[in-house]
Length: 257
Ligand SMILES: [Cu+2]
Image 1 (cartoon, rainbow, N blue to C red):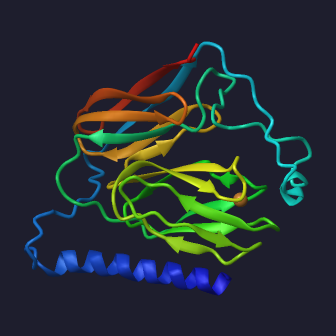
Image 2 (image 1 turned 180 degrees about the vertical axis):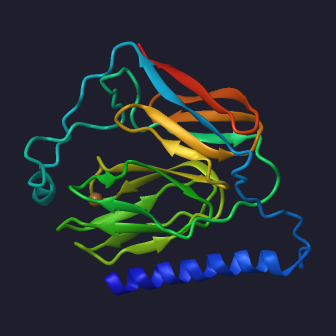
């Protein structure tokens, strides 16, 4: 497994290097594709950061019943609570996906060579919310002593559905179109759920235990930044940043009732 992993990374690095080299070798595009290759200009790049705030009453945590699969239940000393809504101690939301929705210059951003990893561990997906670039390798791992079945449910990308044996070899996949978000389920364990944000650029973040996000390397410009949450939907904010500006914006989600 380790050997395979190294091979995948090597191929990805070679592909990445190949793209970069082609850019420098040709003054103009050899094919008809007009898209320019974009890169972060550190001399002017700015930052958008902030928090995804939450107000109102947080829903009570619901214990997940894993008793149908003892190998899953025994992985947890106390029942895991459902993670569709996780409100942090500072009244912010965990697991919000924040991304630049519009406003970036025309062109293509180099794809990250490093694979993003989605593990199945304790019969939950880790992480629950994952951001990747279009065509970035995504490696699905199974750290559990039990079978899983990985079933992304995209609307625009290709749907697939594959089982993975205990501690099985990682499956490397890609998503070739932007899509926010692609739900992922396990056909064996109905509580398992992840969401993958597939974006055509590297300007995205997922909120963690303090509900904050930071998006670095942005060219000066006017942007629509969206925060997505699986229960509370989306919110958009308009943001303009000047060269080297570090701008703070906060989203404000409310409890449903
Ligand atoms: Cu499963």
